[in-house]
Amino acid sequence: MDGRRLGVELICRLLQVAPSSYYAAKTRTPSARAVRDDELIPQLVELWESNYRVYGVRKLWRAARRAGIMIGRDQTARLMRAAGIEGARRSKRVKTTRPDPASARHPDLVKREFTASAPNRLWVTDLTFVPTWTGVAYVCFIIDAFSRMIVGWRVASHMRTEMVLDAVEMARWSRGARHEDLRCHSDAGSQFTSIRYGERLAEIGATPSIGTVGDCLLTGQSDPWGVAA
Image 1: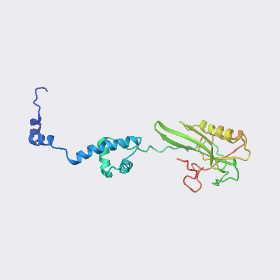
Image 2: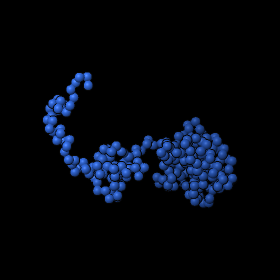
Image 3: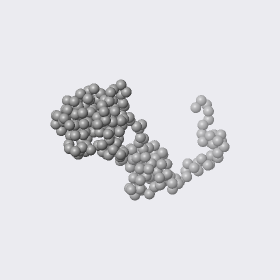
Image 4: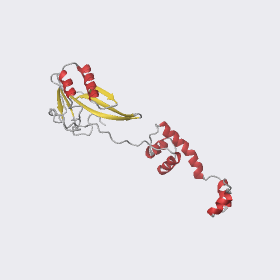
């Protein structure tokens, strides 16, 4: 190229390496480690693929051990780097409770006593989220405190008030149109302090109740219902 001489000997001379060393390395029989690596990498990639490409070093190492592949954790990490694979990274936590400072709040009629003497006396509602392959799915659910049954729910790609109203409609359809002695408790998210939400509860005779931000499901446990994010 451009009249310049190219070749192994010239490169070795510039690098001050004997050409014989280069040829010896090129024709050398692969080491036992290299041979073992060539065997393990396809197996690890197959395990990683079969587990939806989400396993990191720790989980892939344990899966390999369960599959009968004798491999160390550090070795798993090295071979994953060599294969160009990695585990799924946890995304930034999504905030579902966004209070509206301009909205008036309903009083707290529950005072963290999440019990009811009969069905349709206390409903507890909240928002959570579920990470998916295509993005975040938001879920609004309504639980009857007496039976701890989900009586209404809605999944959407947004957190607008409409999804909360849809969940109320499902609860209304499954439990009846009027409930004069019903309290519906939530946190202070803007969806639950909106005028439309209050009007929809008034249509079924329910009384809104709002606790502090983010604690509508806190009863002394981190997640008593088993559904929060």
